[in-house]
Structures are given as C-alpha cells and as structure tokens.
Length: 515
Image (cartoon, rainbow, N blue to C red; front, side):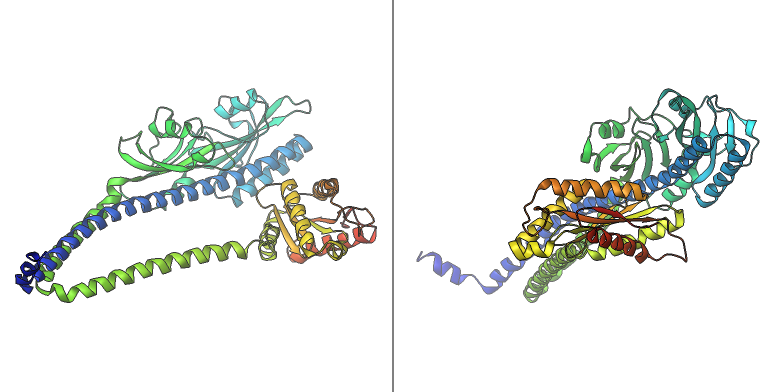
C-alpha cells in the first residue's frame, strides 16, 4: 500500500481528466447502443399496440355493420311469418325493405326467397320472378340447417347489382317448423373497403376479414380474385384455429399467405358472428424509422463524444441533471396515468355494491332512450327497493345493512341479462335500477319476479320485517318512446310510481306501471 499511494500521486491531473473523459465517452457510446436496442423494442411494442387497436376498431365496425342488417332481417322474418305472403303484406314489406336500405348505407338490398329459391320480394323494385337463388351457398345452408340464427355467407357477386356482396341471411319456417324460404341482406363489400382504406397501413400493411371456417371475406389491399377464397392452409388461420377463448385476441409474427412477407398480425374475433379480423403490419417497414433515428442519433453521439473530449468536465454535471429530470418526468407521467385510470373506474361504479353508479346510469339511460326513440323499440326499467331497510339498519347496524346490499347486488347482477345495453345500477340508497332495452313489460316483469324470488330464497333474517327475512319490492315500467312526447325521466317516474304502489300494497311484490 505504501508504494501504490505515491504512484497515484505522481499521475498528473490531465491523466485523470483523460481517463474520466474516456470513461464518459465509452459510457455514452454504450448507453447509445442500449438505448437503440430499447427503442427498437419499444417500436415493436408500439407496433403491436397499433395493430391491436386497429383490429379492435375493425371488429367493432364489422360486428355493428352486420348486426344492423341482422336486425332488419329479424323484423322481416317476423312480418312474413306473422302476416303471411299475400299481395298486401308483401307490398307493405317491400316498402319497409326499401326504407331499411335507405337508412343503412352498408346495405345494397334486402331480398325474400321462397322454399324453391324464387324471389318473393326485394328492396330494389326489380320484377319478382327475375332470378332464382336456390344455388347460393346461404340458401343451401338454411335448407339443411334448422337453426333460426343469422348466417354470414361466402362473398358473391350479386346477380341483381353486379357488385361484390357479403350475404347475411335467416331462415323462414312454416308453422310446423319446416323450411319455407330465406331472407337475405346484401352487405356492400365496398362499404368495408372504404372503411379499411381510411387506415394508414404503410406500403406493406394489410387488413382482412375472415370467417371462422377459413373463408377470406375481404382483404385490403383489395384483390377480387381472392375474395371468397379459402385460407385454411395459411399460417394465420392455422395459428388462429389453434387458439381458444380469450387467447383468440392477440398478436403473432406470421408469414403472409398472399406474398410470403413476415408481418405482425393482430387478430380479434367479432363478438356476435363467426368471423374474425386481422391487422398485419410490416416489421421491416415499422423498423425503417427506427433505423433512421438510430443512425442519426449514433452520428450525433460520436460528435458529442468528440465535443466531450474538449469540454467533458463541464458537460458531466449537465448530463447527470438531464438524466435525473428524465427519470422524474417518467415517474410523474406513470403516476398521473395510474391516478387517471383509478379515477375513471371510480367515477363510473358504486364503491359499496360494485354496480354502476347513478352517473353511469344517467348516461346509459340517455343513450338507450335516444336509440329506442330512433328505432321505435321498447325500453323497460325496473326499480327495486329493499323492504324495511331502515328498520334493518336500526336493528343490525349499518355495517350489516351494507353487507345485505352487497349480497342483494351480487344476486341481482347474476340474475339480470347480459345483453349489450342492459345495465344494473345503484340508483340511490337501497334502491337499485335495471335498464332493459328491447324488452316489453312482460319480459321485465319476469326478470323482476325472478330476482324477488331469489332474494326471498336467501332467507336473510330480518326481525324488523313482518316477513321475518329480507325481501324486495319492485316497480316495472316499459314504453316505446316518442320524439317530442316523452322525456328520459318519464320511464323512471313510471317505475318509481309502480314501486310506491308495491310498497303501499304490502311490499314483497312486483307491481307493473300503467301503460
């Protein structure tokens, strides 16, 4: 040790300064390499997020587009099977079909075929005996399958319009359940194309809509020779078919069936129909910007290293301060994002019961009321109140009352429908509201009675109630809103009056509002 200390003392300050600057320069170069690799990983992660968001938007658009056409088909089936096929009912049906096509830009036409494939009605105003469609795939499918659900058929060129269409169809039945024809909605393939063309996919990106049995419904860039073709042998379909459940929403790097290029494919199934979408982005194209940025940054780092060679000691403190500022900024950003997510969740749900809160309910009621007004659908609302809840709190304490509310809320949530638009919310205090779009008064009554019976079957003791256990009272109201006549509060007020009537009649019952 005695010999080493004088050696350090003999080394000049310039030597130590050179060593320090050299270490800084080498560290800077090393950090640049690490940052470039990190940026590449982030670029690929961002690419995957973009693909996932794109697939989500495509799946939602396709599902909504098909669902709107399917709703029109359901109405047509009901009219034909109820009103029959006389000249007057068919004339009314054709007028309705033309109105539906005018209101839905994705529809090229609506058609009705008898059990032999002959035209019965169409929205285009063409002569009824113009064509026979018994040879179409969707016609054969419904003739051999008794199911009443919607069927999305292979894309075909319409005989009536000469355009590529995606047929969505439903089966017509006779009173004895035998096959009696088909109703078809012709979705315009160009409608999907225009939507897909609105996305910036880069020069080598692609998006596609496929059926679950491997039929290519549409691909952008568009190639008419491939529409309706099979893709069961493609790497994409084999990978997707091997997945189940939630795993069918994801991403994978796969070689294209069309040009063999390696792309990052993000795929997602449609919620209600046997189709899935995929958004494929080119890895090489996405990394081209990273390469340019890396080259530019590397040159800059080398110049900076030369600069540090002359002015290193002055820059060391600056670099340290900048690194600390960047780290603090990232931490602040992450903390802010986490706080925003927490506030968003808390703003739309009730902390005690886990149900939607009053704010969430008001927004949903306004949206569903407007939708029911536009489409002239029934909208039902159930107002539920726990009987003698104040007495329960007085006897057992507020903590026990909270537990009862939680137990009742869990049961109600389990027994209410899970359709799009259905909502269960804590309306206030011990009151719980259930919003049921496309539901008539009878259907809402069935739901309310099922809930009332289930809560009574829990046999939660309640000495302050004449029933000896926790029970519910419910008021049920349903209406078809008319523009300029009804307000959103009309439905709630009607259910509330029915609830008051149930309480006045002795509680533990479901009362219907007057029409």
